[in-house]
Length: 437
Image 1 (cartoon, rainbow, N blue to C red):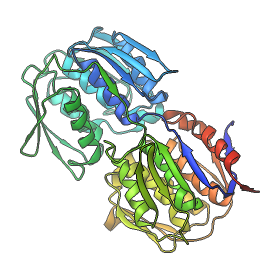
Image 2 (image 1 turned 90 degrees about the vertical axis):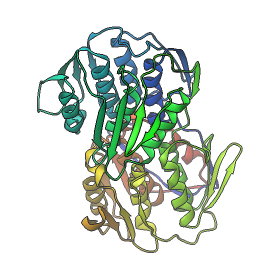
Image 3 (image 1 turned 135 degrees about the vertical axis):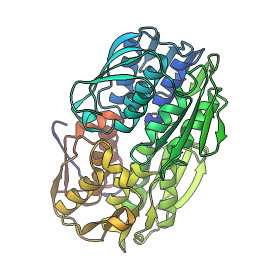
């Protein structure tokens, strides 16, 4: 594949059936909860990718007993009841935002001395609100670069905090980290949340998984109360397929006028991105939750409308919606997505830059904390991906429709979806017609 991937136009494809990897969000939460628990936990359906491997390597460096079988997608972890086996360790979270936030809080609450490093990309991502909060609770930080960012040394031996207020505006991962590790302090922890995503999909996922693992988290005014518990846990946990990854294929239903099934994705998913499928229904797609997985069809569509919608609860699909927008019959307005500036890339800037490179008229809409994209033709372009896996996968969709897109640095998909382009290649084999370039 190299440093470029030339996307071929699919003229006609009758149906698409795919299986996607396990959820990154669920995998990394399950890894943390299993390590904190008092059980030997067998995780099934685990995602193996750059992010999850980084998390696993960190747990091993911290002394946890970890067994991984990539062929069968299984990880077994011996929980240590809130203790860290190696209380003096150096770990590298690489580009994994979940590992960066979750492990920093776990180590702060459990205590010890740690050297934490990360990739250049992760070193640019925000950590300061979380680190400031931990400093106030007695954790000592020595920054090796820019203050408030990776890399840093941390020492925690007298964590003293019974209640904490965290703003979810920049990253809901800050809140999820505090909620899950709230079982560690002897007095437990009250976590109060502010910001527009205090009730967001990722917070709901975290709370649901905590309960699945046996943590009796209780609602409090403005937040949640987590009791200290050492003996929680379960022997086996099934990770859901990654709905975020599934959405790139579901988006092909209206885009290529085909029908799509992603195996084992169902309505009862814990993942917020399941709401993207409701947006496809608003575009006119047919929808059924079948035994093998959710079925979406755009075969009978004669075009589809642009939507006006808030994507704050499924913002990872902003790029996917942006890829559908130029082919809609009316403008698309995506609202309440300001926080995506602080993710793997400044995603708002990336979307607008790359769409404009293709000749698409689009603009930022500050009053809606969002972007507007107008229908229009596509000019041939090489798409810069900014080391952002979601930019690569979403903008591949435009190439499948037009045959005018080349993806630069396609290897960035290793972060969450290693075989994405292999699945795209399989589609070419199923297609009844491929257009030239």
